Image 1 (cartoon, one colour):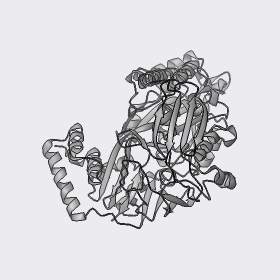
Image 2 (spheres, rainbow, N blue to C red):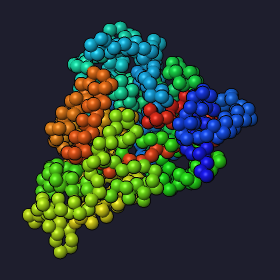
Image 3 (cartoon, helix red, strand yellow):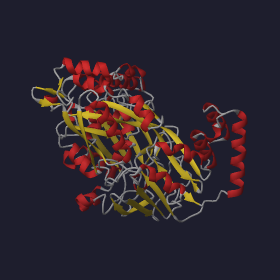
Image 4 (cartoon, one colour):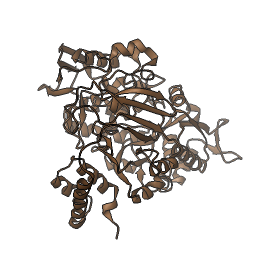
Length: 561
């Protein structure tokens, strides 16, 4: 019989219980939901009691946490970065965040109110806050950040999410008022993210392009020590940290750790080796073939979460000679992709096919998208033939003297390379010659905004519809934003408008379904697969607990003993 107590979900429960994040009743309820028997739950609780007794509960101060990361590092600038990495959760804070159950809770703001017409949101900002530099962090400083995001000169890649905002006011040092053009239920989902983290705008202006690389001025419990793309990012404890009021963070004062070092490990098999050898203490994203081995290692705890994000394949609508602006051609390519076989072969069944724009992790996910984009080679070939594409002597399709050959760029990482090769082989089976080019992160994003033939991308965002709208919004074409395929689809634009004007959760969910169906049917990009999210820590690491609602763990409570 399968030992469910060794399943990653159960291990995650144990870690949360040991760190005091779950009550005994919550532990039992969640254990039953995972399929554990009462006898298994009782045994786990007994083991937790023993562990608490033998290890002690007093946190140990000092030391540096070494965390393996499966990507390269972007500059630590919320206003203008391609990606936000785990260090954002150490050096910055936002006005609100999510607790492990998904509720909005205080961070820089201690409370807030929404007007009856849902067009005004007022935040009460904590008093006495400072940036690392000693500069005052108040409502005026937060307004400067939000205005900076909205200023095209600053190049925020997510500024379009601020479109429903009419104005931001700091009526006094502790009162921030956001006035909306119309109801915008999604506002809290936006301001909680790393792209809306609060930075000292004066210090950012002083450093210019060097900001986020040579210096950072946030308000988080750690300060930037070193940023070395391709290698590591490190931070050190900020001894001037005034503390936090965020309810689920137990250590309200200065962090226990002296510092944290995130190490980029782009060769996936190396990640498991390094954490088992003790070269790193925590890890995001082990190779999928190594998950079972890590789960069996008694020195490790593996946490499995549903992944918000997925891989998509963006085709440049400007390549009319290849028919990328023709829905039938895009649908043919979508039908040529055998998603279930990719999940089995590359993810070792630790994931699922992706037929629409978002994953099943999101509560607004609709299974109705699964009627689209199913694998069917014969249908793909027939649709391409109907569009005028005929096989040449080498088996590659051609039309009007143009071979069906193009380049796809992706970020350098071993799994990305495997996925690119799989797509290359599957498209060749229908007569399409795909060239796959792997690029370092900086080069990738520069080229992605310069109208390449196609882009393979894995987005990362805790509210996926928000970020996916950026990749398919017609306003973000031709270098104006991250619509890498220059897709213009009226049905998709209409769904985005409905999403960004929803006044209630029900309206937001209805707009979310409208959006998913529009993307799955009209294919401004082609969805491919979704993975499960795995996090690993050595058992001498305490207080490090990834959760479903935040992209990365918070580090206030973490200690190594």
